[in-house]
Image (cartoon, rainbow, N blue to C red):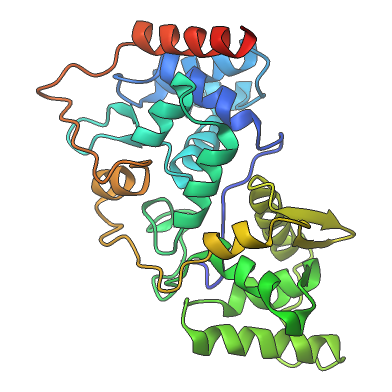
Length: 299
């Protein structure tokens, strides 16, 4: 059953390992079918490069591949960095994913763009395990920044307010929903906890809230306090630019490849690549681009 709250894939290691994992994905997976054997190869490379530890021997023996590796793939998909071709399930990088691997865009700039576009519904949470109810039609990170810009909340958002109110009630970008969430937070701070959703015994909601705090930290626009976030001094204008006046949703998240290409189009208007007709960027070209980028930085 779909969640009636925000949800985002999480991994144990720091989120900054996503870039290293994406490079490994580019080296090992791109152009190949995402099957059991490839998942294990990817898992081995992640471990060999000491990027992160995913999967376990039990999963291997059961012929299921590394479960953690699939979680990492879903996380990269969730951020609009990768996708599988619909017709053959071959692994691909989105345009912004390619630019990251080449070193043409910084990880921070890429995350600012992807988190601004991040939405529900999306291809990553449309169906299956970890899906979010389709009634949620919102840009979560823009919504969080709207809350942080609101003087009524003293430009501060606490962990409890995030897990007990925001992730459950912020189901739309509309002003009506925003005002409802703000009023609920204000009442909660006044000791009126009506409608507040208590955490589970396993800390499900607080873990989700903390993951969102970790993700939004990637923008480098916020400061972390004791179980709270606030806008970093001097970043107010950047945050105001991050929040769109009338954000539009990418349509048809059920069409996975189409959605991922639009979400991960980077700074292009549209992803026009045709993998059946055009030669995809070779691994050698990608590697040479990375080396050249690193050389320029050292020069």
